[in-house]
Image (cartoon, rainbow over all chains, first blue to last red; front, side, top):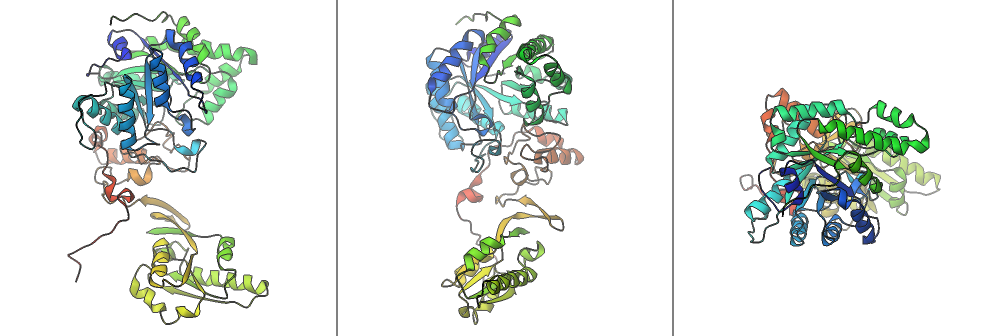
Length: 312
Length: 222
């Protein structure tokens, strides 16, 4: 967690507060107002707002333009970038562009395979992977250098993040090693895959803590509230790398349809309360998929609203 | 070896339906091993085409042959005294052989009779899987003898990604996660320490990104 940047998210974490982040998904159109509307709705309740980059390989308004819009509203965005669609020229170019607007947080991702999306017949790029993107951002920030060797003066001041998925089993130890590799590449914060299997997550965290890795990287626990039992089943069966135990599906499905959304929020709140007691957790990343309006309620119920004020 | 699969009969018929004299040219190399383009397949394809023409009430000559290797000029030249009698050739060699045929006999129409797929192994008869993408700079020494470029769907050099599930790739339950394989092999070899060291961005110039590739071995040239 070494390099200091102007990132408000980094300051919040370093001040010892539980950080709260959330995400907005851009529209599949040129309607930038959607981004601004969603961002404004959640802004008072979170420290930073991620914008997803063509998530699940579905073509959308780009994350770079979206984070610029959010930044221009005076809010704190996290630029998600996947390496699936752009080579190192385009990625570095976009990072420089983002930095020119004062974007200070980046989440380095490889991205879902395009077969899941709306352009399954396309070529992919994968010139870099997520770990190499982190290496690249660190080089740009700390050495003022591009991968090609060009040196420059005005450096991007990026707080470097990545994802971690403790549930992409079967081997939790492999997942800890993988995260250790990302940390070695310069990753300073991590937003985890949505947590539903609390036992596996705690095993992962214990292994992180035993190695002292929790002190080198800030781990924000990923939470996604279930809207209904249909979503729970879909996440269980269809979403790559997702581990949704049967108890979760039974719990959401065990209440009448009109109460399922409420039960999903209750579950998310309970999960966060439990995770607050897990050593090494530095905050929460609430991914309310197409349900951003529920973020304020969740943050209020977990007692993390209002957000602490940081000295400038 | 190079792996190929026969093209659908309808597609081949569509190419050749207007010709009267055809040569089906197999190759005794890789495509014979994967039973897509050897002499046996050349004979089967020629018979099928003859049947097609006969059923349509057409008189067409369809001959078959197979060459030792269509990727080598000396073998292709064995056709030089008789290729003129054909209107067109259907080569069922790999894409290399098909192009080489068209290159050597540049006035002859040459159709592909197979789809060339990849370089891979025979898992068992009729089951072939990819192992190498010929990136031109082998890293197998670092990855426990398992290539992440060929065997990870995202050609990650620092995998696995977060999409693998129970050791399988996110694209299919039938595809093993390449990085799970690498991890397990490194563990077997006692080389897990390699796993946590980030691999820097790869120089792709020796891969297809560098443009059409050519090897000139001065030590072998006469």
